[in-house]
Image 1 (cartoon, rainbow, N blue to C red):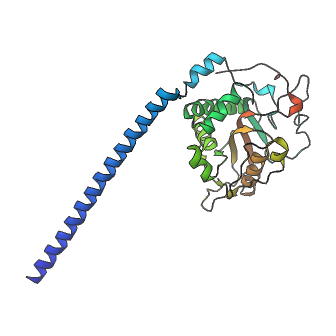
Image 2 (cartoon, one colour):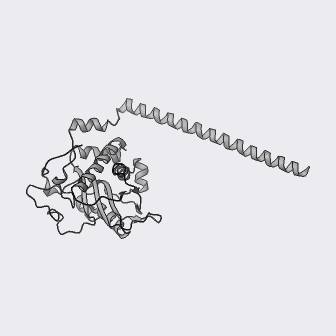
Length: 283
């Protein structure tokens, strides 16, 4: 009899636990549904009051008649715009003889309208649809550079990481989001070996401050092995190259064989405000 009572008590406790878990699951479901309805309501209110709605990126690109730069119009080493009749073998006048920290560079275009309007919106307004479109274009640009013999086909894609507080405030890890699209376009793995140990900002700094900044990256303790890999390092904008160079050096210290920098837009030095050389291409 005592054993039966013990079994009955255990069964009753188990049933109470099951019912409690079921009630908690139902409460969680109701909270999620309520949050979804509230988010949709706020989005409708925001759109109706402020007209805030990100347009279709493909329509914008078509209206602007934008196409990505031809790979012959910029330096294959630092992605700076080439001036007319400039000799680009071994790098342009801006990077020839300098240690950059990375091996080659690819870009979609100069940091000028319309890219200078679209790219910041990916970061500050979490414009994911534009990030997908431009990320896919960047992947195609990398493929075109490989076909042209600029460098070998890469093995993996890495996005320049943001500090977790920046990701939380912006609602997007923009460079890693773009890197996902690049990796998908090239059918490559997107790995995440880097992190930002300190909260440091590049936004709002002038060119001199960026060059002398000490933003550092570190490799994660559980990072995948990089020994002998050809890495594509993706960021939204290359201004001085300082951030990308720091990240590239850390990747090489971890064993990467080559690091190719890929950016949606590149800001030319002030003394190179010129029209790109060569034709422009699209796809």
